[in-house]
Amino acid sequence: MCGIVAAAARREVSEILLEGLRRLEYRGYDSAGLAVLDDDARLLVHKRLGKVAELEKAQHAQPYYGPTGIAHTRWATHGEPSAANAHPHTSGDRIALVHNGIIENHSVLRQQLEAEGYVFTSATDTEVIVHLLHRAMNGCDDILKAMATVVDQLEGAYALAAIDRENPGQIVGARQGSPLVIGVGIGENFMASDQMALRQVTDRFIYLEEGDMVRITPASIAVFDAQGDAVERETTRIAEAEETVELGDYDHYMLKEIYEQPRALAATFSAAGGHEVADSAFGECAAEIFDRVKAVQIVACGTSFHAGMVARYWLEELAGIPCEVEVASEFRYRKRVQIPGTLLLTISQSGETADTLAALRDAGTDDFVGSLVIANVDNSSLVRESDLVFLTRAGAEIGVASTKAFTTQLVGLLMLTIALGRRNGLPQGREQELVNALHALPDYVQQTLALDTAIKALSEAFIPKHHALFLGRGIHYPVAMEGSLKLKEISYIHAEAYPAGELKHGPLALVDDDMPVVAVAPGDELLEKLKSNLEEVRSRGGELFVFADRQAGFTSEPRVRVLAMPHCPEVAKPIIYTVALQLLSYHVAVQKGTDVDKPRNLAKSVTVE
Ligand code: G6P
Image (cartoon, rainbow, N blue to C red):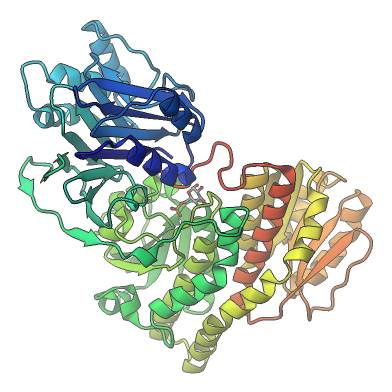
């Protein structure tokens, strides 16, 4: 999704801006641009459709150098991907602006501005902001004051950064609903939508709050709250070791991240206690909130939603706690009946997903005993706005298709199940078994990764296919959903997941030789039931791919290919079967030649509704 980088320095900044954009590439985008104010306060703009590499080529062909600049990667919402629609947008040849988010009242504003003679050169919602800023500068010589009058007119979500030829050496920013962080340098300062963009220039960050506005110069940072009062926001230092984003020997980030899972799972468990499940792993006042929890409402999107679906089985079966799970975009707009004593649990790798964040905000605190987020990014909006926090230690996840974030979320969710279950009659012995399983998890995942070659061999059958069906039962139904999501995200094969018992209620009609059927069947009753479906699948030319426990006694036969999975405790199964399905999708996508880490049309962090 869109990314912002901005720099106010005493040196040339275009290379800092380009490096920042490269570091944001993983989030997904379709075009890129930069604007600098050079030493003579000329406003110079490059915009290109496609990759940051295209923008670099433009910059090499015609270098634009200057000490102040803003840059952007765009993920189209209003207006097709094109150079004209790429940011920065300009007005009157003096102001340039970049924007993340969506301006909902842009049509009305556009009509007003056009009536006043402003000429629009793009189809974006963003262009209204830059013209409003230009208009506000009439009779006003302070761009920050002008920006304050502009944001008052905007409805929707925005993170903004703007420069003005008449105010050289400074950048103004504002945030509402989309993240914006200040990078604190020595004799230079920066802004970005994600601190990852600035790690090459600083390790000190100021996270802006909702409604904040900011002015940065090389020597100063001035932050103002929604009321316009000057405020001090805390500066956070991020340790170097917390993030490594090098690809190393791997061909793709997705594969690297799949292989990092044993380490990420162990790090997540050990950072949260390691030998036991302490309430404090969820925050200082966790014990007091957990004592009052009677039910859990999980809200999330995408892969994180599937983690929530898995957790529902654990919370109900192991902790005896009623649990509802809903995608955030639905939860937000539904009239709900809340069970008293419900904990609102959001799950999000990025901690910035717009719908999940809005669900937390819309829910308020009145109906809930408190809010807990399971997130992978410290200081993200969900982390800062939730009562309780469980941080996964997956490390930076670059591949758009989420892998290690999902499995580490499951560690947090199992620990939550234990913490709540203990208050609800979970026997001590059972708790110890679960803790032992958490300890052993990295090893089971390692054993699963050792099946990589066998999984790659299975994957070849999927390359010419256009459809695939994933089946699972019980807790393995959401695992099948996650497997099908991975396949469609990165290989563009249409994939659907069904509870296995539903096969005969519709999807069986689709089975033919173009429809491989993947069964997540660790060795439960599903196997027996599946066996009875085999003939129907086979007689329609279908082929079955069964991921089954190696002790389940299931063997390959014509049109049934079995992958023998490690034997492990029940609670480890959703994790290791997901890892196997991640590898399956990865190999299909690589052989199909798709852009595995940056699949078309998708974004890593969806910061608009
Ligand atoms: C996007 C990503 C998915 C991710 C989802 C939720 O769609 O492409 O991989 O699962 O957002 O993101 P979150 O950061 O909230 O987990």
